[in-house]
Image (cartoon, rainbow, N blue to C red; front, top):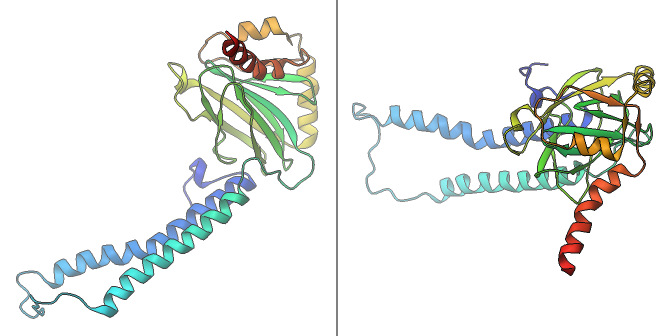
Length: 267
């Protein structure tokens, strides 16, 4: 691709490509105004310089109806086009909208201090700071937090979504190329924010299935007690895997804040 190898400019998924296309189209329309303005700035500075005696001097000139129509009509039309483009793209890129490609893989995401927990409810496994997903299969990330508000973002695959306590925000993405991508926290959340990163591995379906089997061979189980230890603040955690997840753990994480709020309201 002719663009530099920057994550946002070289996406590896359909959602990221659509977002890149939207950004490029928006910049192209804005350049219709910006480029002539920059050209005219330098042209007028050269054309009407003090030493150019051939330039027309019109000190009493006030306005020209045709000229004013042009420089008001063109930006107005561009704003209308950008508005229509943004409106339609916003609905098309709704993070909650399911993607084509069959039933999605569900990954439940919990933002902690300062690490990410990923639970695979269908496979009944969990990981810390590591995600594996099948290539070309949609993935639905159900994102919540058990710590200060955060933001879940995989730049190569698409936009971010906020992680907040007591609620679940869904983000649908897909990886269309095998590879290893970086995931980050995009919302400042304290001293460990800068190192709150995770690895995303996009694998062919067969390799993903083998990875699930290897995780299930682990001896670690994510119980409520183990989760309580994991939730304690820590920085730069190495990836970890859990062969099994205690039933209803994710729902407990989400609901605990609702229960606290209801308890406080009754006090």
